[in-house]
Length: 65
Image (tube, rainbow, N blue to C red; front, side, top):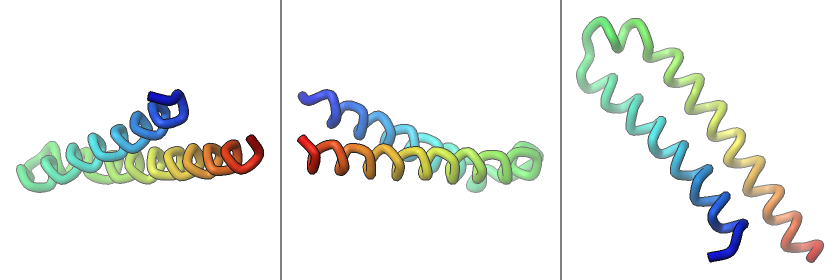
């Protein structure tokens, strides 16, 4: 598997893991949800932005190769 595909899969995998973490936290509810739901949402947004940046860089690299 090419290096760029591995980086892409890792970035998307991290977003999926954080999204699942947030969904499970909301489903369970309770004090942990109240205390950490906003922080988990911020993590998801940050990692989505990083994944989008990675995708854009990989597209740019393929066009210039």
